[in-house]
Length: 178
Image (cartoon, rainbow, N blue to C red; front, side, top):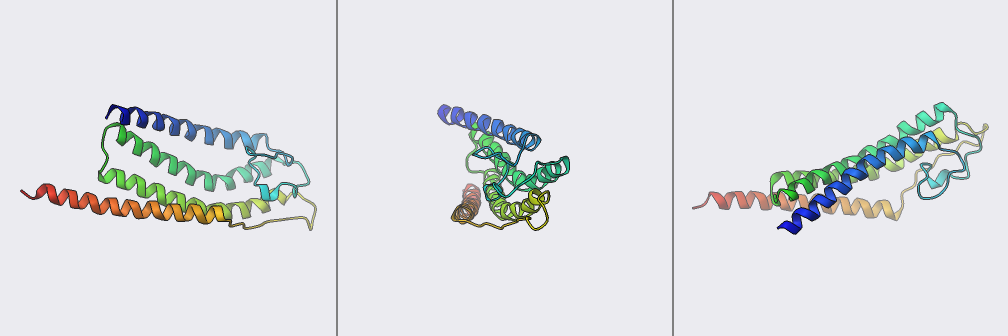
């Protein structure tokens, strides 16, 4: 039991740090973004790298920040529910309705993020290339096998939460039987 508490504490702390780092990375990313930013930590989606021909002005940075907040909020929700879930595990609460709710909500947030991300990237294309000369504006909706895989994972998580909810109901019913 102690091992579960320590591992749960570690993951809760890890997710709390990740929560803060994602917010900081988003803010700093847009403060210092340039069209030449490339690589893993770039806030500019890879589909638009090479299609932005001018430096970002303050309006582009602000608009880009707010458009990219949409999928970030979904990611933060997933992390928030994981923090809450591991906090319950720290307290050795494993099969409760709260666990089910956090797992289900994390699945829905993950699903929502996979729907919001392509739309956000599409709008971000308009924002980022709006500074280009006329005729060189560019926006794309991209759905890849990664999106499909995460959607399937989210649906499985939601299904597991439903099965766990039914198990919790059966456990509650059994406790009432003498």
